[in-house]
Length: 205
Image 1: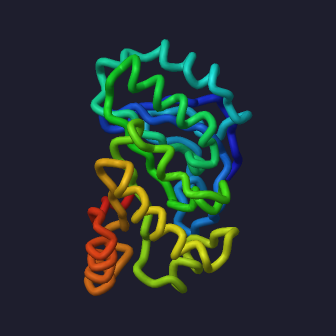
Image 2: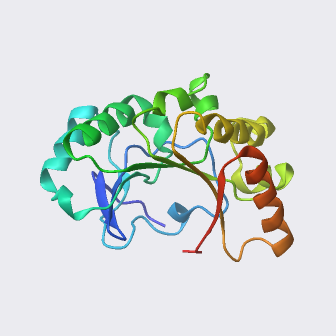
């Protein structure tokens, strides 16, 4: 696939406004959508020509009628917690000016990216954290997700989910329908129950 770059920072999906902050990601998932396409639905290419700074991101909100949206979601072609220094003040801006619920879709490896627990930074800003669990098996996770942090990644992702419970009202872990057996889904549900978070099987796209 040839890569087209643009500066699509904000884009619409299913009645929500999505925020695309970075191309960077610590994973090379075998199933990643960006291996197959460079956009989502009506968006232009989500491959950013450069990493936007805070002023660029905030300026984009002036182009959108924010009263249209149910939720603002930090989710793009990179891992949003890679751009935590922009994500957090952007979330504060959204809360102050638009009073909309905010969700972060993440691989859950932000603690490893930054070398410290990041869940406390979400308090009062983020309403939902959605973490990609993908599989109940640590070895299978390593094979599918191919994280640059190695085999510690699975446990770090679970710890991040557990930590988020203390700071974020709604914590969800997800797998994709049709990718797991019923038994594997039951094991994922058991992991989520033990962590005290919600489990969601999201549709295959």
